[in-house]
Amino acid sequence: MRRIIPLACLILCPLAVMAQTPDTTHFTHADTLRGSNTLQRAWWDVAFYDLHVSINPADSSIHGWNGITYRVLHPAREMQIDLQEPLEVDSMVQDGEHLTYRRDGNAFFVTLVAPQHTDERKTVAVYYHGKPRAAKRPPWDGGLIWQHDSLGNTWVATACEGLGASVWWPNKDLLADEPDSQRIAITVPDPMVDVSNGRLRSTVHHDDGTTTYEWFVSSPINNYDVEANAGHYAHYTETYKGEAGTLTMDFWPLAYHLAAAKKQWPQAMSMMGCFEHWFGPYPWYTDGYKLVEAPHLGMEHQSGVAYGNGFENGYRGRDLSGTGEGLKWDFIIVHESAHEWFGNNITDKDAADMWVHESFANYSENLYTECQAGKQAGARYVIGTRRLVRNDRPILGHYGVNDEGSGDMYYKGGNMLHTIRQIIDNDEKWRGILRGLGTTFRHQTVTGRQVEQYISEHAGIDLDKVFAQYLETTQIPVLEYKLDGSTLSYRWANVVKGFDMPVRVALSKGGYTLIHPTEAWQTVASRLSRPEEFGVDENFYVEVKNVGASAASTPEHQGGSALR
Ligand SMILES: [Zn+2]
Image 1: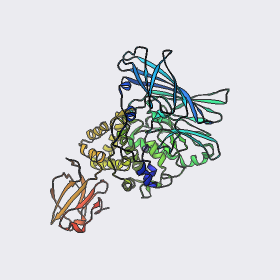
Image 2: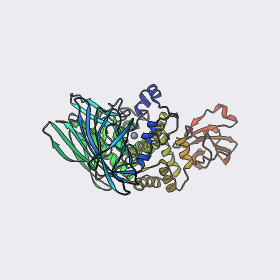
Image 3: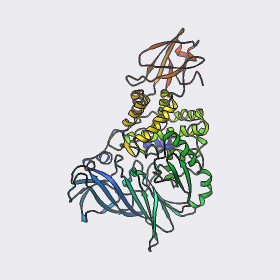
Image 4: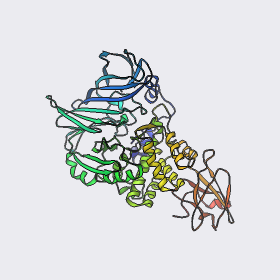
């Protein structure tokens, strides 16, 4: 999931999308503080977050503290800690001493007193309280979600991707820095139960009618994935014999949805089998896998995927591809769980590279369809989703200002990866690349460029221009051609300089041939009798255009017109 252009809106409310499309030309001082590795952030590396939050649904307030333990990378005196308005800091303490700080919007600049020696581990505790921003349209426009379930029980959850975890707890709100581990201790009124990330370590009842649920994540975690879900839950556990041993899979539906969950959620097991095959071992065996019912559509919260898809297949009962394939499985189980590999295991350092999360998660829907119904069904699905590509602006956003690019990072990004699979034309090699990304960058933050270079290097094909075309422009490559007797001429148009993507085309009625077009005209012998018989394998996300003498009667078309 992501923030600004709601996925649901791509289908349900195009006008609302246009209204919400962010201004991508002006960024503020606050955007820079939020999205860049400022001087006051760069000198320290988060090692551990010790988060304690009490949630009070009666007045929609929270209070608590976070112990921020960090390694000193180089000595400095001023530290940036993020906590969004209207939350208030009560105090900041290091080595028993209260620190002074100044506030600049959602960022606090703290003056440290104790010397900060390189390689030393230090801790700052931040105490805070207030009524955090209530989510307006979670999960896309997030914050705290104060809800009641359909029986009238209080139900509280968090969702803050894009907006940032500092909407509900103080931290270094920068994608590039994850703690090595984290405690999440959430106190809620009885009889609510809190489900957060990782493993439940302890449950402590208090005399004031509240209970603290202490969860622990033993792995690096991106901060927007840290969650609280407090409600009236049922709980059951399954085990999965996977590539890295026995994985616990814990399921937390609302108590009155237990039967529905036991019917719908076994898909999590087949999801796990499919994605371990294609992406490698689930990245969090130590922390387990969980599916937690939430009062919003869904979010890839690490080792605790939030689910709100109504226990039905498709995306809220709809098929995004228009082919019928998307109604055969539960979109939220598949898409959000895929983020455990792409988004959580491998996290982008900057929101501008969010395609590393969403293009692969979108592509996983194709692979899951393939696992269930075969390769052609998977291809039908991903090709079907092209109808949702808008080509409004590039998939890459602006760096350093917490800016995400176009929502095309989903369908166009998934189709870019499907096209790259065609270029590599060796499914085992492709699977090796997908798995290799997971091991090479295991539990790391990356740049999109690193991912691009890894794929090119291991494919043995320079894909630079392919990535540039699909990620940095809004243009879809057009294969121009003309047939003159038995000679077919072809070239790429509408492409970045130097674009040289190979493509499979029909030069006879018998099947496809791989050609290597560039921007310059080339020729090849063909046994086609009419220009209309020429076509491109529709698995390549390109367009085709006859520019020959007979072109006037041949409208531009997408690949795949000649052969199906
Ligand atoms: Zn997603």
